[in-house]
Image (cartoon, rainbow, N blue to C red; front, side, top):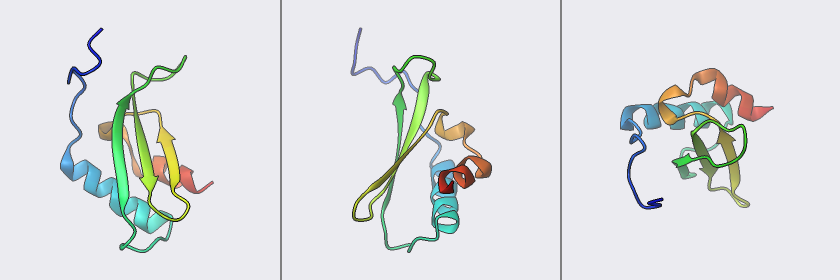
Length: 83
């Protein structure tokens, strides 16, 4: 098993930008707060093969997981982070 292989698809930069825009809007945070979006291989039982981890760099940092690739995330997925 090659842990360093790059077999997973890279996230589309336009989709990453859209997701960040949705996060700023839906979570009502300042655009000065950095947001990190990472697409990772999920190894948890029942998890989709790729998940997206979103970190909002507030103090303390808020971290969210969406069990979809960046390309599959929709506006409604981000709306659910608020609940």
